[in-house]
Image (cartoon, rainbow, N blue to C red; front, side, top):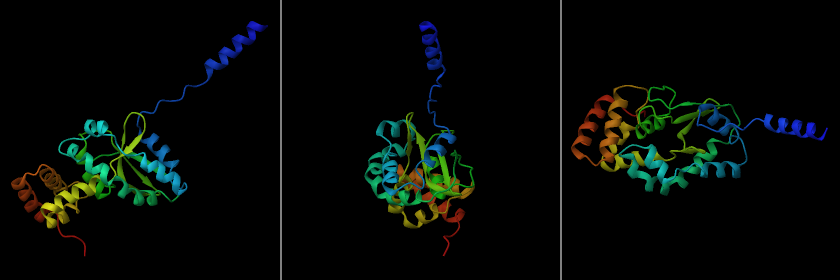
Amino acid sequence: MKWLVVVVLVACRDATPTPAVPTGTADELAAYLTTVAGTDEATRKREVASWILDETTWSRDLVEPYRSLYNEYVAGFDAQMPAMVAALAPLGQVTARRHFAGDKKLAPAQVRARWAVPVQFPSMVADLAGKPIETVFIFDGARWRALLGLDAIVMAHVAALDPACAQKLALVGPPGRCTEVGWLVADSALRQQRERFAHACTLAATLCGNPAP
């Protein structure tokens, strides 16, 4: 009888399901953000603070010339937190999906952030109660991080060279010529390629229309 009990206990122990190892899927991101949205402010602050990428992940997952922006990203991360913490305050359904350049539901900042990662890179975006959570998420192998504030850094670099061109860059959106030339504006600005930048801004002035009044 004693051996029977041991066998039964071992069998029950072996039948216990092994927790799934997270792999960075859209469903996993949605499930995680569901545990954050609508919680108390202290919880939201703690979670958003944990989204900062380490330098190794940044250098591995971002492309040139965005890799050079890491120190600016770290320095500006805290300033971006209050708006994100507030954006996560409502309760509501969270959905997530792959971050594709052709996604017409992307916020403009998410469109521009697509240029920072390789083609087909599995970055993610998410919506809360039908509205974009305006950042881009990256799974580092253990947990979710975010490119919080990256767009503001890029826009500042462009504005430092040509404020009017930065206004045009702000108009990028769905796939089209404006978005295509927007990449050229951002890339040349970050690389400090003045002639290429001036040419890109000339194209943007024609292709990107006018800011809304």
